[in-house]
Length: 328
Image: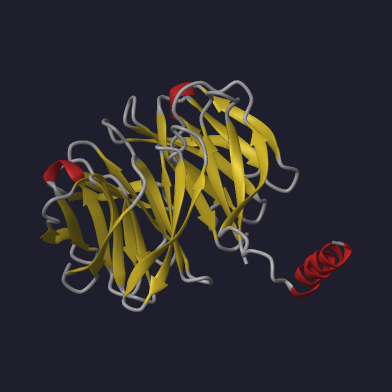
């Protein structure tokens, strides 16, 4: 039997030398950054790439966590907010925008010290934030149906774009000048003309509701919307809203991102998973499912740092930011 043991040893050595081992998971957990005493739900994230700081909307804790990604530690916490939901960082003015659901305000903080620098009063349910760097504009979803247009230089509200109901995830398309908006209570995806400042189309998706997260696939010219009832990843043609793909995904999704480098899509879900899809021809195919933690549904993929950051609320373990490294 010694010859069998010798052959097995050679096979093991060959695997180690030639890379025959199983392919690594599409996302590998690299580290966890403790957030300290944070209770309740955690909402959206934003990043200051120059300083490598991650901003965490700690909705249930009425606070904002500031994480040092280089040191992988909590740098500080800003308290006294009112259910912060959306976060957006404008590099040109070195200003952080924090949208609050509790009172509809948008709190502004500036510079390395994040000194308070003003407030924009939207009155009701200030939510997701998107930054148009080229036009120096900030868009904020709020209330019973509007996108506020903010001048990033003066921090003044320039206009409102009316919608049929409260906007959830939305994306700015630089190529077309459109904004695509998930409006779940109206059971539609709204198409907005930025130059005209108004909605120009509405795309229903029959048989699906509760569309919260959204991303744009720049190569495929498709809009990716994730629905919760039932849990589906739906790709729509950006030109006219034709459904190009419709796949099952994990439940209670709140964020979706495109990894253009690897031609992948990441969906983070409160069910306790991140689903990964690969571009397959004109559609997508499931690539893997990574277990996370119950309620961990918000995340941020930072292509410049090549990392996915997942917000994990306190539960069986303390609140933390889990860092995932895409592979290969």
